[in-house]
Image (cartoon, rainbow, N blue to C red; front, side):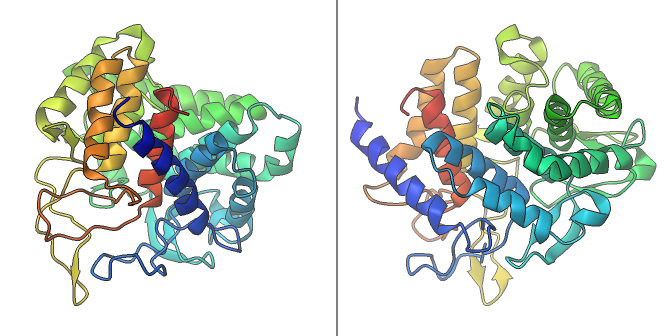
Length: 362
């Protein structure tokens, strides 16, 4: 196979990157900007996003790394500011656990519950140690859900858009993550409230999608019917609709993503994205986004699960074509040599591992 040696090397590199982002206190940062190879012009990502860290924990499960997941779960319990009171995780945290930003991103809590389930799904005795983390988090999601929407302003996973409770708005990705999170919590500690809330969320989500025949960014009294690459999460890992069903909602959504967000097999977050993570004297340059390797890997996972391995490999190999031997996977890849990206990105390397596993390379 053409990329065999590169894949083998990147697996080793990914393991090193993941371990380098794991802190002594259990936190997992999005990128270790203290390293000499971290670009000095790239934005500092020495923060803990529970979502990113959860994907990293799942990748660590696959790699056989066993000593970081529970340390991270302990960090969430002991340090994540506000969780004990609300059961919710917010946008991002400083390594010591203080909130770096106070915006509510529902998917963070849902993704944490999914990572816990993934780690303990074959050891239901050991998971009892984290009963408090699971129940408090699941209860937090349920308490803030008000039949059709959350009772607070929510922020999307890209941190650039908001939904408002008076407009009964929901981000599709955020809602899907919470549905899956409650399903995972319910498997360990059955609770009718989790089931009822999960079903309520799913009805609202599918009702909105069925009005257009595909999933779109956000919905409510005012819809944002544009396409966002995070909609891949509907199919995997949250499986709101199973990829094996050949459901038209899935097919139409993938077609929309490929039509609007893919250029030469590079996957972009959304149309007209300006964020590049490239800084100049504390100012974001915003000279236009590149394609995101983690989204390419995400697409390859989804397509593979849909039985389209040949297409999946095109997205997977697109990133490999840009990565030189013994180099890292950045957050973004640009079609020029000027813009600088966060590199290495822990989430990018985690998604590489997940895609490699799905494609049978691990």
